[in-house]
Length: 465
View: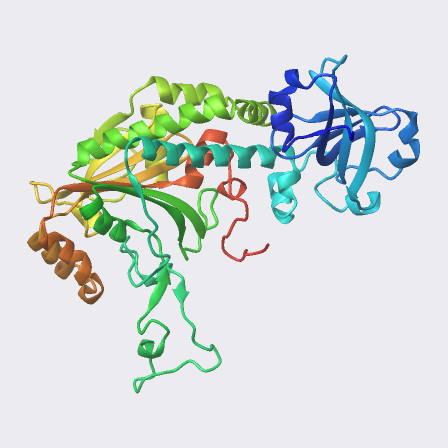
């Protein structure tokens, strides 16, 4: 009878269940991270920051000569308790099979070399950076953050919906100049009308269409019948900004809640952020610890500070008073710049803050006008070191008020007729917000550049891989 060999799906699974398989023969696969001739091979399969040591003896001397860092192997051997201090277990190899190999000379041209590389260098070979310890840790944390968000909304009885990526309108009101155009026109034969302008009637959708910057407007329609919904998907900006916190393609979490007013919106957003942070600390501890040690950043300290304190809430008006008193050069009615947010969150409060009731003139048309007719029921959550992480508002549910606002701003009412109609059929107070997924990952991991927390970053003059 053929001897049964236990084949594990991952090193993580093996490490978790090792007590049940001591002295038993198992099979495991991974990529070589380090090795020493006639002594040991260390492999990793990406499932955990922890490596697995394979003990080898002289019978593998000819095969070991073909091994170098980065190649993939399959190992069959006996699981034993390790005599070394670096690991609890190791495998005493009986068989080793090389799956995929390449030469040491080729290795020298890649970021797989066993030395420290800058994040910029890793970006240059983004297709390989998943194999590095630092980036694989970031991506496992990203996975757990994503899972925790879905879990939170599931527990709160939200309905997950998918909103269109192709849209006819910019819900942020920034104008089509900052949106990516979607067309099937042959660029060599672009049809023009009698005025020499682009004939959008002949385009695929019969009108101008763009990649979305937000699923909010469609989310509001869904919430008007489903009560509480959320979207979690890609969004796009054609803004030519190449800062540490901007991407051209990024992911947004956007809940919409019927019967929620601004205060409920603020409470809910704070609960979501704290739930995610707590979940990630509990489920990504080893990866967070590795990044903290690698980058010499106090990740756990600042994450626990968020969990242990309430977010400071301050009106825009009072924020302006603080900034003027601190001689930061801003007047009421002007939009807050990143340096203003940085000062308030990092220097004045030293805590996440929620700024609310912004001036009507600097916010989009869909935000509910307050009784003073000067401000809207908007809120932004600002985190120290990262800036705005959430932007939201109570939506304007009054048909006549919303119509007047659209006309005053000379917006395209032909594109918004359906959005207006939501207010005609049983409209209720409704609120929502957008959470920048990558910015949240940035804060949790304490990674400086947003380009280093997404698998394949898109930004001006860069759409490789």
